[in-house]
View 1 (cartoon, rainbow, N blue to C red):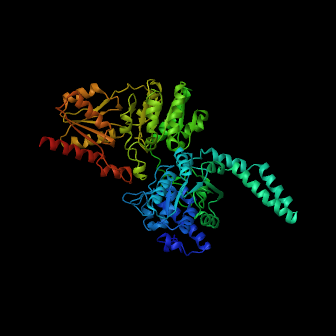
View 2: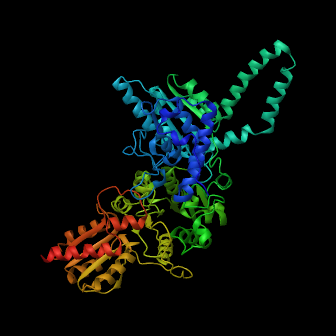
View 3: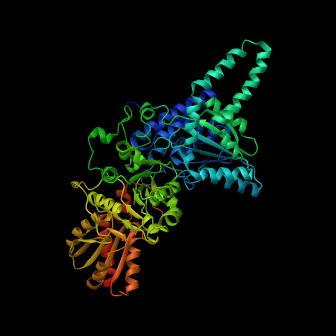
Length: 636
C-alpha cells in the first residue's frame, strides 16, 4: 500500500505556516491531520479518540492566536495530539510514548508551545489564571487560553479555578471541549441536563412555531423575531450550563459546533480581544472521522497498535490473549464478594473499564458508583458510606489517588473508617510516563497512622487480600497491584483470609535475604536462581504487607543474615525499604547491612515497563548486579 501523501500537512512545521491558508485549506488540513493521527497511532499505539475530536479546535486556535506568544494551556494532555503535530513534532510523532520518544502528554521541556505540563485532569483553568496574573504583574500583553474537556469538567478543581478567575476578572479565555465523554461516558450532570432539555419535543416545537408564525408578519414579524431571539437566549441560558458559567463571572458563548472550522475561527476572532473571563462552549465528537472510534469510544480511547481498516487490536488478530490482567482478576473478585456480602459497593473516578469495575457495573449495577474525575469526592463519598456500615471498595489508579491525599488522612484514616483502596497501576505503567507511574503510593500511604497496606505477588494473593480487606474492620486498607497481565497461575475457587502483617518465606538461602513486595517477588525469585549459579544463596521473602510489617520475621532475619536487600517498585524514599531500615534502626540491629533497592529518587520517563525496569535494574539480571555490588562493597 503506498504511503499517504499529505499535501498540506507536509509543509506545516510551525503554527506560522497555517496563517495564510484559506478556510477551505484549513478544513483540508484538519482532514489530513486526522488521517495522520489514525495512520500513526494504528502502528505505534497511544490515545486516539480524544485527539480526533480536537483537530479543528487545535487548527483554529493556532490560526487565530499568535502562539507561542499567546499561551495555550491544554487540559487532559491526550487531547493535544493535533497540537503536537502543528507545533514542530510531526516528523517525530511516530515516537510518541516510546522510550526516548516524545511524550503522550504536554511537557514544557519538550516544546515552547507546551505552556503547562498536563497528564492529569482539571488543571488548565487554574494554571492559565496563574499565567494571566503573571502577565499582568509583568505589564505584558498576550492572550491566555485554557482548553479543558474530555471529562475534566467533572473535577472540582476546574470550578475552583473558574470561581477565582471570575473574582479576579483577568483576561482569560476558557474553551470547553464538550464531547460528553472522559474515558468512559461523562458523569457531568450539566452536560446531561443540556443534552436532554435541548432535545425535548416541547422546546423545539415552541421554537419552530414562533419562527413559522412570525415569518408571515412582514416587518412586525421581524421585530417579534428579534424579541423571540432574545427570549430564546434567555431560555438557552437556563437550559445550557451558560447560567452557571455566567454566575461564576464568565461571559458565555455557545454551544457551538467544535468540529466546524468556519464557526470556530469566527468565534475565536470575535472573543480574542474581549476583556475579562470568557468561556467558549464547543460540542465535539470524540473519535470523529474514524468510524471504529466513533462507534466504540471507550475501547478506542487509548489503544495498542491496531488494524487501521477495522480498529481491532493486532494482539486480538494474532490471538495473543495471554493470562488475565490483575485488573480483570480484581473486577471479577469484587463481583463475587458483593454477591456474598451486599454491604460491599464499588466506587470509581471515571475509570470503570480501567479499574475492572465495569464488570460490577454490568453484573450488579446498584452496587456501582462512577463519580467522574473527582478523586477527592470519591474518597469522602466512600467515607460517608463507611460511617453507615457499608464497605466501599474505592478503585483508583495509584497516580490519581495522590489527588485525594488529604481526604485519605482526614476523612478516612483519622476516623478509622473501613474503606478499601484498590490501587491499580502501582509501579511503572509504561508509555504514559511520569504523570501515570504509580511510584509514590507506598510512601504517601505508609506515613498514615492506622492504615494497612498490602501488595500481592500473584493473582490468587490479590483475591485473598481483597477478601481479607473486606472482613478487616479496624480502619482503612490499601491494596496495590501492577498494570498488565498476571503470572498466569490457575485461579483457585473461593477466598482465604490472610493474617494481617504476616510474610512468607518462598526460598531458603544463607548469603543474603531478599525482602520483596508485590510484583517484585517474582523478579526476586528469578534473581535468586541466577545468583545461585554464581554461588550466592539468596533467601527470598514475600513480605506481603508494607504496614504493618512482620516484625517477628524481621527480628529473625537480623539475627541470621549479615546482608539484607529490600526490593520494591516504588521510590526508595520513604517506602517499603525505608520502613525496614527504620525498624532495624529502632531495634538497634547494627550488625545487619541493609540495601534499599527500588525506583531511584527521580521521575522515570516513558517506555515499556520491561525497558524501564532494565534501565533502573529492577529486572532479574539487574537485581543480581545490585546484589553483586552490595556484597562486594561490604566485603571490601
